[in-house]
Length: 236
Image (cartoon, rainbow, N blue to C red; front, side):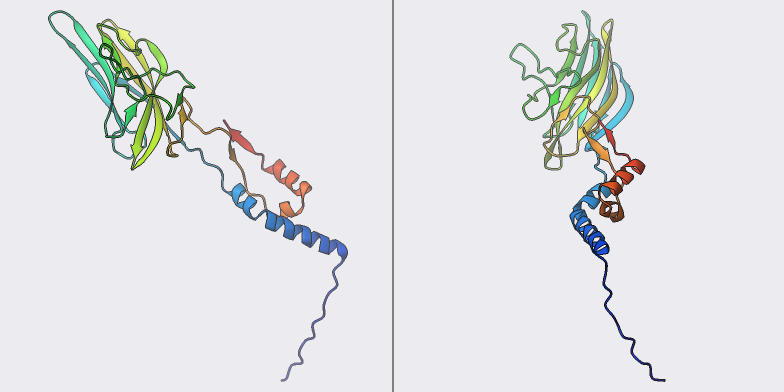
């Protein structure tokens, strides 16, 4: 049976429909990048590891800041006695070439002290990274005596790139012995980007749910409705 071809006619759309379609097209094209941005939440670039590890006399701890199973620094607590006195030496020692601890360069008569940084201290390329010793007895040099929530600042290598990080510790002096407690550490995943001692997250990290093109095409009213059902949350 021979079919008769169906004729096609052109529909005349109303001005209001044309206007809505144009708004939709403009919103879709303008939002091409925006939707991708909204659909991909910004991720914090600071990797923070909480812990609670006691480092008593004649003990040490190997710090692996980025969890690649390669030690980055060793925190040492060396204790001993001789006929005259007992001693206790705390130190933070790079475990690999290219790694450094923030601190002064020392002199002929003073040691290379690793700073006991306060929360909020910047750790960046402008600082001096020549520290080794944290505390020493019986002469009591450097600053790691009876302190809480102080920070070691680090500059270390991941591959061929430099990163910055920190470790938070408490130190207690009892008699001639010092005990350290490591309570957390962090590093910045972006090479050469500074980090702040104690900071565990990037500032202004927004978590957004994707808005549909339908919401965008509706203009302000559509986005307002989207905001009501998908509030923007920020972590600082």
